[in-house]
Length: 189
Image (cartoon, rainbow, N blue to C red; front, side):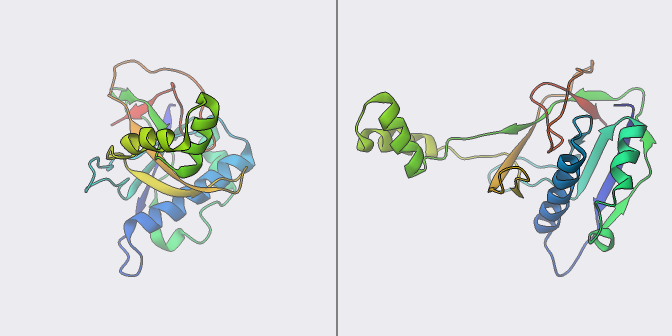
């Protein structure tokens, strides 16, 4: 994780920022999936938390080695987005940068199908399971998210993204095809 590329959304009167970030992130996911890459992480320096303010912002930062970032950029994955973004070169990560884990966070949303499966697994009535899930669904989700289409399953879903607390030491590991990891860190600056 010694290099990074900054991708910033340009203001657009026709498309809101979350829509553009969703399109950009979907393109990134497809490229990482097609490359079978597990060496590129992401962060969102302008993300905001809170039920009313949650947003990934207009700044996506890619982290990796110079070679892995150049390999990604060589596949022209930004086709169709060039008018909406400004892209930096692969730059060296600042030596004094802290590190942060950026991970997917999943929530029980209380869907009827989940309640039905829960009832079956725990040998309780569906009504009791719905009551249990109703309490879970009352929780307000404060994390930013993006609507994404999975390249492997073709399913569309909300991908909630959580930035951990900054720390002094890097944690090595691999990243999924969304650029996220349950344990590895990326530089944070």
